[in-house]
Image (cartoon, rainbow, N blue to C red; front, side, top):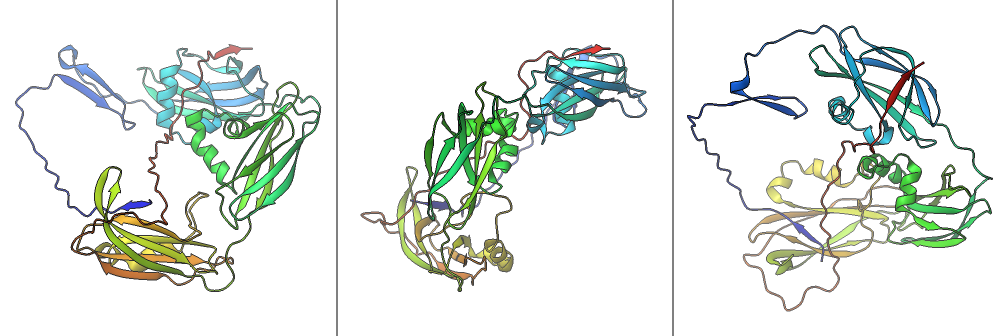
Length: 427
């Protein structure tokens, strides 16, 4: 049973202030990043403010790259006394702020360098082939303050492949909501993995999940999330969306287990709907007490029925006083494309679902569909007030779909690199 919970109860937030006569005994310095350092007041002699001129950083330039070492030039600014450095797969730190990177490098790097390097070999980074990396330096002033960050990106060279590993793709069946592909590897392929997503979706997920899962490159995500084969294979993807372009990524390996360049096979699922006016009918159902994860709550059932010209549709339910503040903006958002590639933005077939709404509440239900030409039809609007009391039915409605609760636990920061000991050796 798909449930949408509308909170209608007012919440009162009480703030109490208590006077305290206790003398503070800690001196706490809080940075903008949220990090802080505390001192016992009795152990402090005095607090003094100093001025350091200019940026405190170690500028870095990439001179040469191999899988064994990266040749760099690192020059400190005038106020930079020393620096630390670390190396990360670029995908893992792409969304990290300089403050977060400074804290990360400061915490995990033990070696501090007090000199400039016209030419030095950085080793110990455990580099993967054909992968983008970023070297991060953090400068320190004469007081040992963590200061400015510098970054330099590079791409490691590929390892020569054994033979020419290639996986051919054959369409077996393509429907509205599923498709089946057959994969035929040549004799140079030892194994391969395949994964599919709506066009652009996998790239977005890679950027989002690389820090969480520790992916160094896109091929690692295909291998972890995909279906793996060692010979000719066939796979069916289900619960897909009609009239949608999908990308199937194939990551093959040669006889030595080295990743080849991944390939992409593109297909489009069968279309749903027509070129006419797309509309959605809204039908109000029972207002009953229904189970909400073990709690019985008053629930209004609603059925959404797209016509035969609809290729996809959206809907929403609003408390009337909220909806009436800007109905045109709400309708415009309803008739919109997703801001980024994502699943479950649209619905396709008739569904019945319920919303948890208090009695005697004025509500507005809206729905709209688009046709195969991506032309939006009129917005259906139904305004009603829930009854004074919800009924207690003997059985739940038959044609419903169940909601699965989700929680965004994605951390968009950085993941510490695997333990590595970086060494700079001057030439």
